[in-house]
Image (cartoon, rainbow, N blue to C red; front, top):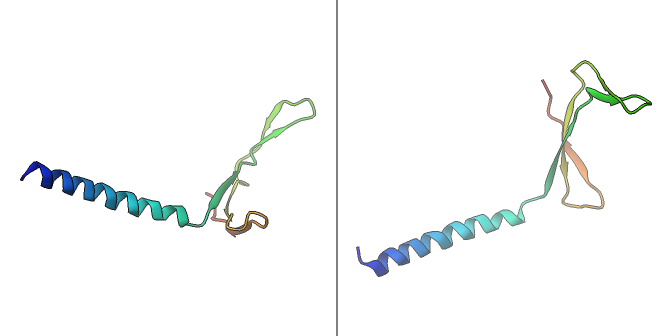
Length: 77
């Protein structure tokens, strides 16, 4: 394979890969929030550990930053 053709194919592949990843910039912005309810602090600022079981995860849609919307709360195990 001639060098010019190899360079052309490599350049074409790089452009194709870059253009496909640039489309990701148009995806909706989401934020994943994890709430760990096992750790609390007492009045003196010392850590108090609680029993596990009340943790939660929230998926927040930030397409409209002035009014974020919780779109999912998957179950935690």
